[in-house]
Length: 342
Image (cartoon, rainbow, N blue to C red; front, side, top):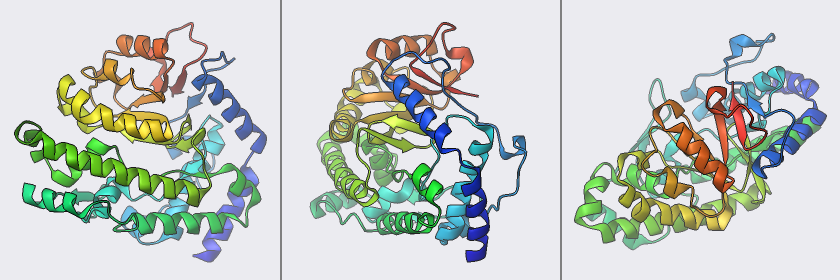
């Protein structure tokens, strides 16, 4: 495996154009600051079959889950493709442990699957949730927490031998979801009933998850040596320190979003600043979301399900960048505020 790493990391080292990477980050800073750019930054989302050089190893997810060297090569395979297409990708990698990280820190079990990222198993009852809350903030190294830090250390130490890779490639923060998404994973679908039956208990869990998130992320920032002015996540160089996920929010009412989601997102945004992602239809909460403070960008993976004319108008008014938006949704005269998906 060491020989494989040397071969392909050396190959990628020779391909990197640090000057172009600096230019892409400068352009994206202008996007978040709503300053005009000559070309809207774009992310090429086509597959590896679209690049000339396809020589990069790939390992089954379940194998890479237990082997940081294989995980590193899988992650760098994404960088390898984006370097060739010469887009505005942030050139970053992560410990790819899926959405179960924060639930595992709280003691939730998870399982690997044949075809997707791990699935969390929620706690069985409301009594279990009460016991969980009574224990207070868990050790951030519980479950997969420790693994995330160990993998980041392995990545960082491995890249040291390759100066250009070390300088250009960021290790982005683990997928902790958002407070409400993590609570949904920990509690299961019964949390949707509990918002009516025992809202106080729901708030207790949300508060505990938020405090745990903050502890973990502060430790992470120190470990990686990253601040909160700008950071990277997924395809993006972003203004702020975190990327929250509000996928579960698409299932609840606007009033429930305002009560059970927004205050906890806001606490995290107050602490770190950053962006929010959601899958699905967010029309019910997008206006309220855009009122959030320290929110610099929004990414929706299914714009066709949303009223994009409304979303574009709201985000532009609030100076919130839209990330990975297909060109058909972007005003023709736009010169800033968007990262384009191609």
